[in-house]
Amino acid sequence: MQIAFRPHHFLCALCFQGKGYSPQFIANFTAIMAYLNTPLGENTPITVTANTDSICSPCPHNQQGLCETEASIAVLDNAHKEALNLQIGDEITWKEAKNLIAKQITLPTFHRICATCSWKKLGLCENVLRDL
Image (cartoon, rainbow, N blue to C red; front, top):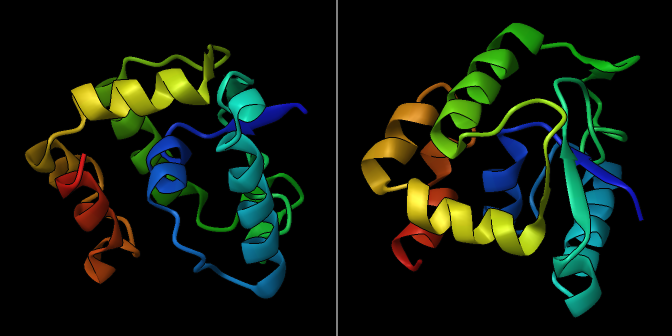
């Protein structure tokens, strides 16, 4: 299975709790996470991309490969790329990504890099990060 994530989606994937933009988006994200959270999936390389990715494919905001809120998503991607020391084109396994997030994303870092995220106010990610 080939998987690509925008930089901010590594944290979104870790914190995913079955909520999303549409039933198709949720089903797709659920399937990706079900795979990644298996022994085989945990060691699957995930390519870091600057465009819509494996998670975005059925999103109603996906406009032929670009997010309709691309400018705000790019801000999130850049902040996450910097915090996780990732570059576009890098490959990292889900296991490596989880370890990297645990080391690099403190609560103050989370509040800084996710400041513009519309999902932040729900507290889902903060609760997951507190448990790391």
